[in-house]
Every structure is written in structure tokens, then in C-alpha cells.
Amino acid sequence: MKAIVVGCGRVGSAVAKKLTKSGWDVTAIDENEEALARLGEHWTGGFVVGHGMDVHVLREAGIEEADAVVVATNGDNTNIVVGQVAQKRFGIECTVVRILDPARAELYATLGLRTVCPTSAAIEVLSDAIKSCVVKPARASAAAS
Amino acid sequence: MFILVAGGGKVGSNLARALTRMGHEVTIAEQRRERFVQLEDEFEHAAILGDATELFVLERAGIARPPDLVVAVTGDDEDNMVICQMARERYGAQKVIARVNDPRNEPHFDLLGISPTVSATQTIMALIEHEVPEHELIHLLELRKENLEIVEVQIDKASPSAGKRVSGLDLPAGSRLISVMRDGHAEIPDAETELRAGDQVLAILEPGKEDELRKVLLKK
Image 1 (tube, rainbow over the protein chains, first blue to last red):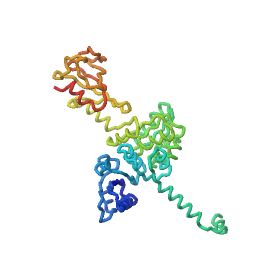
Image 2: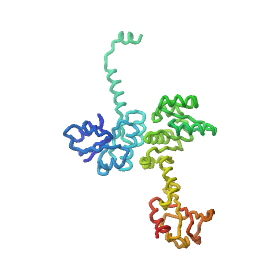
Image 3: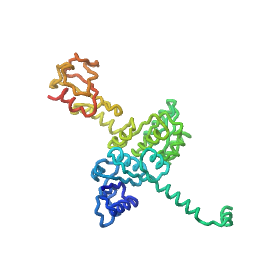
Image 4: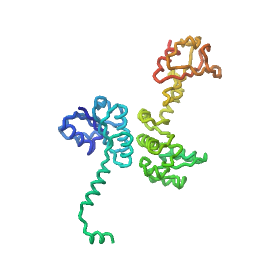
């Protein structure tokens, strides 16, 4: 099974390594050559330097034979466009797109894109963490006043 | 009309000014603060500070009404695509116009159904083609949505079509001659029209048929 990871930052590189561990053949793409270092010294997968919007770069990474694409560059709009290119132009149904803005993540999910929004997840986790704290009423009112 | 302009650089601000002068209601969104301050001086409350790919910024600019026209002319192609898509899909804006900064992104705009697009590079290239005679077949207009294009060719003495009637030409399927310009007059050709050296011929065709058409009209 072949996967392409577009954007090899903190998230992309970790996903690439994780997929490799579970047996995927992974090629990562990043504009910045130095991003290769994030994959570690023993990286056996592919790595292509270039922009995810560039169809030649996607082809070089082997998008035509890919079974899955993960899009996690640091630009929401870049991810939205690259995700749709992978899905609509190259027909890769399993295309997952990271979108930090919850509003856009929700909108594009309704438009048929598989979106993942870490911001929404963080909001949930933080709110739950606060709810699980036992706050004494006296302290709460003291803080309020 | 109510027109939302996303991007307040040179293109956006000049558009907004021209449209305002024409009597249209315009809002203009710009995310760079220094630039916004200048826009606010000129456009007052019609200038909106913020990233127009954020829904709340678009909403402050009046996207929910929705505008009769949304013009996305930021310097970033991804942003222009996302603005147009959201305007249409989420808010039901009927008409969008997008600027293409990098012509290599043009296929992405097409893929997402964003049309019409305007690209300064493409426009200048088309003008160059028009000026440079070696390019025998000049692209005048692309009707992307219709999947048709209009081209111009100049018939010369050596052209196989010179001296032939239109009915005698083996034009490729999916192409048609639409006008013949001769001595400063244009006429709409029919089967009987004879082509002559010096004619400027306009043809409409499906993209990809250029070579076949060139062979029939021009190649020795």
C-alpha cells in the first residue's frame, strides 16, 4: 500500500513514520529540503522536494499509484486545494486533509473532503480538562471578583 | 450591484475604486494592516480588515447577503480558490471572478470549477502570440466552461487552403470557420466561400484539435 504525505513538518513527518512502521510504502513531500531530517537517519521511504500544488511534484512522488494521501502543510488553503487535487484529479478516495481553522474544516467536510481539525480536538480536550478539575466555590468566586 | 472584492493590493484597490465610481456598492477585504489603513482612508467603512479566507471576515464583508459578484484578487492562488469556493458553496454567490497569479495553477481553478479566471501572464502571452507571426495559430479566446476556443490563422500563398472553397476543406470534426477577414471586411463564410492568400480566418474548435486544423488550413 502506498501513501503520500504532503507537508513534512511536525505532524506530516510523524504520520509518515507511523505509516511506514505499519507497513506502508510512504513518500513525503516538502518544499524545504531540510524537512528530510525530521524523518530520521534511517528513513527508507521516498522524499521529494517541491510544492504540493505542483502536479509534477505529486507525480514524481508517485501519486498515480498511491492508495492514500495525507495533506498536512502549514497552510490551510494549500491543504484544501491539494486535497481536492488528490481526490478529484487523481481519484484518490482516501485523501485526508489537516485544516486548522474549525470553520473551514467543517465546511469542506460537508463538501466531501475528509478533514481533520486538530484545533477542534484541542478545544474539546481543553474544555473537558477544565470540567474535570474540582474547583472549590470560594476559590471560584474569589477569582471572579 | 453589490460586489465583494477580496484582496486590497493594486488590483483589488483599483477595481474597488472603479466599481465605486460606477455606482456599485463595494466592500474590500485586506489582511495586511498597513495596506488596510490606506484603504480605510479611501473606502471608509467599506474596507474590512482580515483574512478573506476566514468565514467571519467574509461575513463582515457581507458574504451572507450574498453579493452579486465576488472578485478574489489576492496574491495567493490557494486563497483565491478557497474564497470563490466558499462564496459559492456556502453562501450561494452566483458569480465569482478569480485572479490567477501563477499560470501553472490554472488547471486547479478549472478542476474546482472556478471560472472565469484572469491571469496577467496568460493575457500578456496571448498578446505576444498575436504579435509574433511564427505562431501560426493564435489563441484569441478560451471558453473554458464550454470547452471551446476561438483561434485566428493567416492564410498565405503556400497554404493548402488558399484558393479552396470551405466545402472543399477537410476540416476536423469539432471545428468550424466563423469569419473571414479580407481587405478590412469580415464576413461569415459559408460552404461556397473561397479562401485566399492574405485572409485572416477565425475558427471555433474544441481544444486539442489545433494541429489537425493547422494541417488543413496552413501546412504545405
